[in-house]
Length: 183
Ligand code: IMP
Ligand code: MG
Image (cartoon, rainbow, N blue to C red; front, side, top):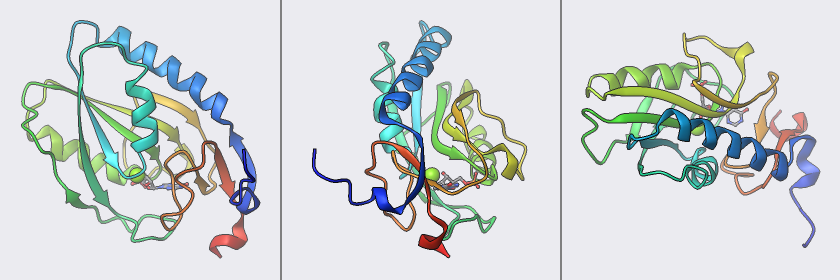
């Protein structure tokens, strides 16, 4: 493989591609048990979810469907502004469906708290949350994940879908960004 030109921007690697793959398979197994005989809708929160969701769904060998929403609360910075705006809505009716929201990271919880309320109005049979990463120290809204890949410390992380200013989403691993990159 050629040189990873983005590696230099990392303070440290938290999870390698292999570690992530192993964990995602475990989550897929749990989902497969919990949703046996059902036909869940995996609802990804763009853009950060896209790598995790692609891998997670391929570890779920049962009938399911998918949709995406996009919300924005960050406006490009490293912490939430508190206001959530839906920039891409559902493309289908979710009434009576078992919805699994798929997120890259649960941070303040503001986004998922808002989204869960918003989706409840549409009367799904159930709503659960699957997040790759959880940063519990930063929680401001009462949200807990039903499926969580890894708990991370209060540091800004990128890779495997997660970005800083739209960069680093393509990294196969998850790393902590050097402070000097965003300060
Ligand atoms: P929350 O509303 O604060 O929970 O924000 C969740 C969203 O913020 C995630 O879906 C990410 O897009 C973004 N986010 C929060 N923490 C990080 C981080 O450490 N790296 C990259 N994106 C993050
Ligand atoms: Mg996100």
